[in-house]
Length: 422
Image 1 (cartoon, rainbow, N blue to C red):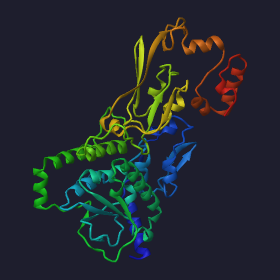
Image 2 (image 1 turned 180 degrees about the horizontal axis):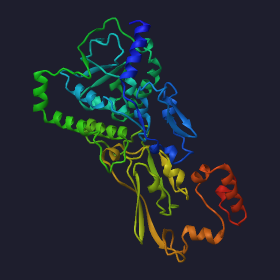
Image 3 (image 1 turned 120 degrees about the vertical axis):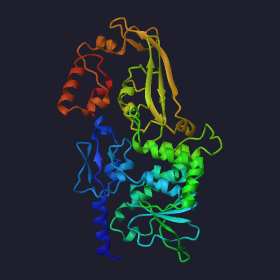
Image 4 (image 1 turned 90 degrees about the vertical axis):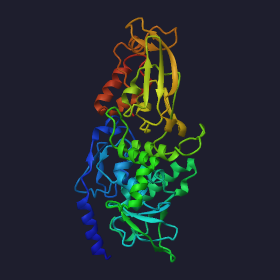
């Protein structure tokens, strides 16, 4: 295939892809302008995603619809239909699928591969569309090793996407390292002299032999896997998790189900997963619960006591709860337990006693010797002062922020965190 044919193929590819939809309200930057997440803009190969006043904006005329943003955004801002389900179902149904090559639609000779390979699956789209959940998912349906074919990327008009594919492979290997399966996903960069021809299966039109059909009907385990894959994107009206996280949790459970009991001390050191700690400074205000986009942190309280609950499988490490916590009681550290993530464990991070404010009668967390809630205590010390969390203060216009700072300086005991603008 010459360069002109490749360019035409790229144009055809672009025209066949459906438009990517953007839901800006789901972005962490709409809730905190000081948020540092910029993965979509950094990884977009054509610069189609820019940060307009800190908020991501997709320019349709620059977008090549490669699909990278579909799985790198931790909150699921970008979405469109893809081939995730078909890839897993079709790979599972291959007569032989111990070692499988995954090649993109532009590969000119995908069927030529290593002797150890059982079959080659050619996707409809560029491999950049496949996220970590898709690579782990192929292992979950029975593949022992997935070889990502990058040996044709250098001559492809979409070669700018190769670093994105490599980053996804590296992230998958890091995730699988806790299960000692990092060698199960490997990139292939060059053809070898001893390569042979293997069956080529197109992901959109997979062959189904009678043997494969009856095997799928008579194998209860395979049927259960198919049901799990088919249901993975149906969603739940009460579920707040982004699509990529839902997929990853499902395939991880499928992958680890036949394994021996996973020790409690094995941490899931992977991007987007983090552990949370709550200090005694917590005043049970509940702001962390309200700003969390995935309901990962919850506050249970009554008139007498409170408890902070954390679900690590839901946390996407957006840092909103840490940024908005006024008493600085929250901190992220290390990695959650793989067992807690797989079991959707609800961890009790902190508990304390509730007191009743003698002035406003509101209940608040604090020692018995405190008679005023934090709000009333501040009002007593600063009759006309205004107090805002740092994350909110930083989002205000410069002129407004300076006025608030001037008001605070007029009153003794002004909040030390906002004595000077950032």
